[in-house]
Length: 311
Image 1 (cartoon, rainbow, N blue to C red):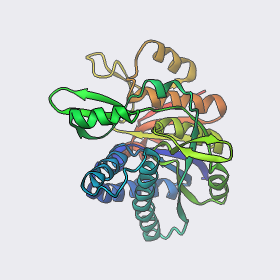
Image 2 (tube, one colour; image 1 turned 180 degrees about the vertical axis):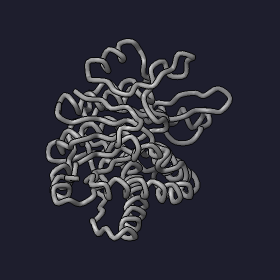
Image 3 (cartoon, rainbow, N blue to C red; image 1 turned 60 degrees about the horizontal axis):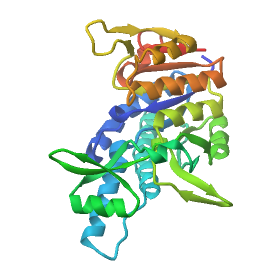
Image 4 (cartoon, rainbow, N blue to C red; image 1 turned 90 degrees about the vertical axis):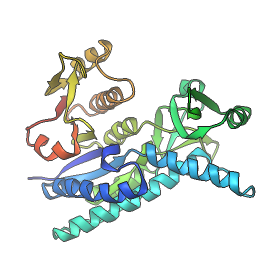
């Protein structure tokens, strides 16, 4: 088959939740991605980083508590660290799997910055939980520094950060050059490193970017044939979790928007994926979106499962 350019968005299931889990999980993920490459799909990969960035934030905060000379790492730095080490594990596992199959395609990770609007409404009502449970005293200190916290009864307090909408992918030209050259690119990990433009300077923002939102934008920018969103369920469901639950095999943008108005999709899980699909298809109406699980993706691409969304 003629090579089709795709963006593949990997969820938590593809990476695990701890360092050791990730090392094992990426081996399984690499096999599924190598299957796609072997079938003629030219891969551009992005991934989640929720557990990873939270772990790094906890570690850097605790380091500051033990060694007073150290400073806590800003959220943007934690995002950069998570991009680096997730990309490292993923590209090495994928390259190894490809080589074992006689495929010599280069695999690269691009540390990616994404601009956000400093006046985005998300900064005034943050929703993303990050880091460790804190005492009341620690929570008060965070508030004094201008950060937001949320109490979890019986457990303590957690810091919460904003999830603003992505504006521009700073390194998109580099990503495009590698992608157009037929290489496999891992980019925009964890939604990208959120930055704010201040004149000629990019300043890290205390925020995270929804990885599904950046997957849709990356797919639009690269004008790929297909956006593949991998999650923990084999397809999108109507009435998910209810007795009347039923799989949705296909839908177009108009139907998807109606389902959104009907409240069919969970705000923190499926809704961002559907919104990303709609954004991509409005920009690239000749493309398509597949939502399925890692274990089902090969079959779903043959029309045996998953949910396909078209313009």
